[in-house]
Length: 277
Length: 277
Image (cartoon, rainbow over all chains, first blue to last red):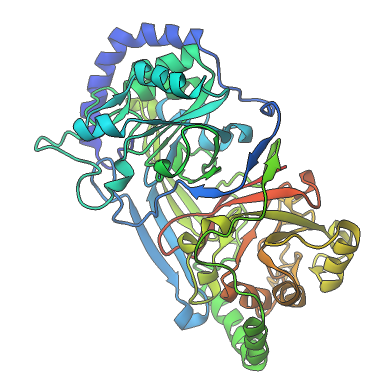
């Protein structure tokens, strides 16, 4: 999710967040203490080798009309030089980090590591795609629950070690018009995300290193407290939002390459995300 | 290479370029007409499968002190929100495209495709690393020549089909101080690059889709005309500059993943570049 410029939204949501943390903070802390920490030191190669034969682009094209979390413009493009004038095209981007297909680094919602500090071997992971398109079509506020994850495992086997678990809600098909943000008359957004209990299940019961969603936020649109962000990111795990084309990759067996920014101190940012299938 | 803000440099260099193009334009045109066009349409999977067991980061960390082609600041980072104030960290980047480990899209030096239009299968390619560290240590203006490429093939076999050919000059070890730009008292830069004849050899005699360098430019530092840029990019092939860690990957057998920006209309930009080994 992403909030630049929308200080009022930030303030409103963070007041709600603080209330949440006061009541749930201890529980979240306990959950974090009990979960496996994400490796942040030396390379830890997955056992064996990875094989692929084709590449699928999981990245949306990012233009200035891409929907932003707050609805405000998040990017301006300045033309510095034109080929027809001098033989060179060159531009300058003015860009809020959390825009387009983009990473949430742990530092986005904590004082943990920034995007450039994520170990490179944690950017290339087995990809597990959880398809909730049917229930998301019925309810735009649908969430991935522990039951969805258990159902996935019943069909496909255990979630891979060191996996990225991605939610396919079908939301990547709503890029035109207002359906992607899907704001109601009160300005509350309505799109799917991961329920905090699903995040906690993955933290405590499985060895999962990343979450990806095809919507604007790891939390579903009406979340008042970003509970999933606050459960997930402070454990030095990353998230990826606004992912595209998850319907074009298998539920299991693909590898995600999360080309996150290596900009020093980044809280996240536009990323080139590929699947190796 | 990258020139924002340095209009005088642009003007001076482009006058030289125009002189070059007047004399060499026909020859470049002929070379382009005779070379294999880079695929730009449907996926063209490499025959067979690719296998890897570890990931090497070919990307430099990009801070505001990273050397720029012109020597001017190319990036500012604006802090929009702080975790200690409101529970969220968020920033906005003001960033000239050709900075850090970054892509040159064909559109940078032509009216051809932009970074977002490069077919995704052309971003994951067999990597051939040409080691010219010995001669670059003797001469900072060293260039990769056709003889270097033939010597590589004599040792390692034919350049792989659809390869990215990377120059390892050892320049990634010069990131601190002024050695990376290595400007003389007249402001002329001195670092290695690809000789235009090497680019033409690869265009005409081999099926190579990309060039990568560990310096600021596909052309060596003192180039008056960007001859290699103008030979290479208008054929819808891409380049990658300021690549890191090429000494950590084998001369042949690795796969480069060029996580170039998918920003609409980009002439290139900071990229997350990995090697799968």
